[in-house]
Image (cartoon, rainbow, N blue to C red; front, side):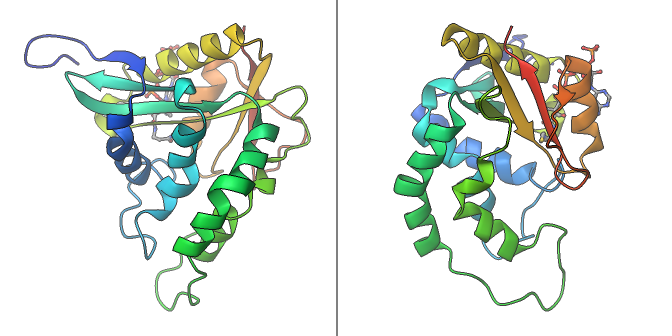
Length: 211
Ligand SMILES: CC(C)(COP(=O)(O)OP(=O)(O)OC[C@H]1O[C@@H](n2cnc3c(N)ncnc32)[C@H](O)[C@@H]1OP(=O)(O)O)[C@@H](O)C(=O)NCCC(=O)NCCS
């Protein structure tokens, strides 16, 4: 895809001005790869768990797709998940818990990942302490708006993050994914990610070396 001036989207480092676009893309891709707008009582929940803490903690390991000034997707990483867990517990979880008290049980629509589960995860960084952390210390999240799929941008984002991690001496990176997101799983496997030993059918975990 090219913009009006014929330029193809580029991958560039995250900037503070991308903050709101990042939150929006997170929300628009958070329901198994599709739009999660209105799924939870508060649309800020998903980005506050799965996007914004990452750019607060490690803005230098975030890269975006820039399409003529419009942000179309991102990859977010942390090099040392154990250190991120400590930071999250100290700096992020207290404010998150204040902003997001536990909701009443849903009376109508009940998503597979309930609001109560999402809020509990947002306040509990220990969920990120997987058994393979020594070998796979980094982890990542990647999301592209649907109009940018299938153009090799996901592969380029992952490559960019792997290079940045390798430059820091990080040997390998992992990620967790929604078991219903079969398209994302096919993408990761195509790129060479493999299943980790502690992966479960209801909570898949994949990993790859950085080089
Ligand atoms: C998953 C995602 C990041 C993939 O990005 P993308 O830019 O569409 O993927 P690419 O075009 O770089 O594809 C890279 C390779 O993966 C393959 N691939 C990508 N999506 C695939 C799919 N759904 N099924 C099978 N193969 C797929 C491509 O064919 C390509 O193979 P090739 O390089 O040999 O030609 C993107 O679709 C996305 O953001 N989806 C919504 C959010 C999401 O699900 N995020 C992941 C949460 S865990």
